[in-house]
Amino acid sequence: MTEHQLSLGTSAARNLATTTKTVPQMQGITSRWLLRLLPWVEAKGGAYRVNRRLTYTLGDGRVTFVTTGADVRVIPRELCELPPLRGYDDDLALDALAGRFVQHEYEPGEVIVEEGRPVDKVVLVAHGKLSRITAGEYGTEAVHGTLADGDFFGDQALLGEEEAPEWDSTVKAVTSCTLLTMSVGDFQETLGQSPTLQAHLEEYRNAPERPSNQHGEAAIDLSSGHAGEPTLPGTFVDYEASPREYELSVAQTVLRVHTRVADLYNHPMDQVEQQLRLTIEALRERQENEMVNNKDFGLLHNSALSQRIHTRSGPPTPDDMDELLALVWKEPAFFLAHPKAISAFGRECSSRGVYPDHVDVLGQRVPAWRGVPIFPCDKIPVSARRTSSILLMRTGEAAQGVVGLHQTGLPDEYQPGLSVRFMGIDEKALIKYLVSAYYSAAVLVPDALAMLESVEIAHGAGA
Image (cartoon, rainbow, N blue to C red; front, side):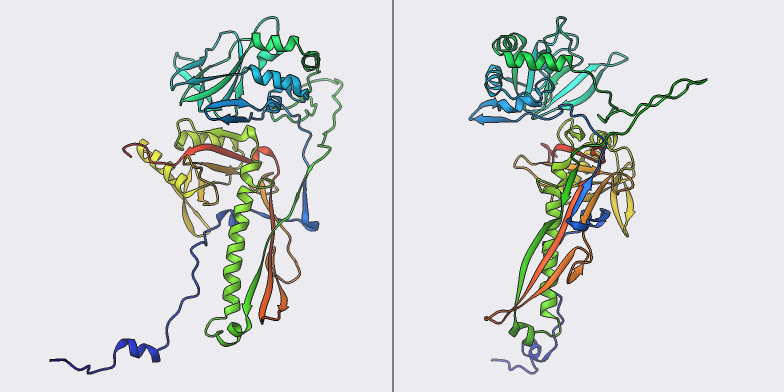
């Protein structure tokens, strides 16, 4: 027997009810800590010039390779990253030198060179990770650094000194490595066939040593600890002749809203306002992505090579984070890392029985290491090999750190550095708004920013 409905059903009742609604949600919105934490500096005129003391280039770059299947070759011009060859421009001689390098494969634990032995070759690291090791004070081994893709050592072999220098450390493979090596004999044979290379190296050996401090800046002569009336040194502070200028970049889009939507469907929420809110969120996400990854001003590409280190074993360990702090030891402000890199660091801490502390920042508790907060940023890329990077920076003009650049007071400004301009209504009854965000970032001195590279974020076997 069929039972008859005795009261109004909920589905019909809802037709007369007022629905409680949320504003439109957007999964792509993140915390954007970088934009919130950087001090923002006015860039009037759309540009920001960073004046620095004169710095001598020491040839601390990295070498680039090309691969064909399993064969690896060095790009000849990249050999100019070796200090003795810096500024050398004879392509024929560079091609000949590049052809002298021989590819070798090494397994983890194999010794490449031994401390105290004569320097008998130039070594280029095409792929893999190696450790520099010396004998410790009490008979133990001391690790003094890590070499990885693009690094090199043994370049002093190019100077052809009568008494061959000795390796100052043992270099041992940590992972499987692909190295390119050129023996001193092969180099000398090429050198004997190139008068231009002979002249260049002679000029390099005889060049007067330019006094500089530990950062490569032109020295300022001072006198201290003297008595009586000695003649004091005269000096001046030299500046870079062509300082770098950062121009404001822009992210833009045209927002379109049909007049019928704006007229008839504008209650209880303003459709134009909600469309604009989500558009601005997307622009700000793009802004943070550019400030991290842009090849001109992005932080990943503006970290000085001398301020980049590799993890010792793969995952980010407390030792690696301490090494970063040693590079930005003057008033470090915060770490910036992909959330998965932060997770990998937490696993390493847990495996060692170490527990990072937490600090309060803008009303939120965030993890910290040595009191320096660690903020997540999903704009830092993760490579196909599941590796990422961790940044550490000092911030602010007063601290000679990293700053964000923008310009306020724009026409039709909606937020600082962001404008919304009405562009009219077209023949299709579409209201159009031009939404523009202007921004950039600047690293005032190289030691304000450091980067930990090759951070493995994948779980280890059995983890």
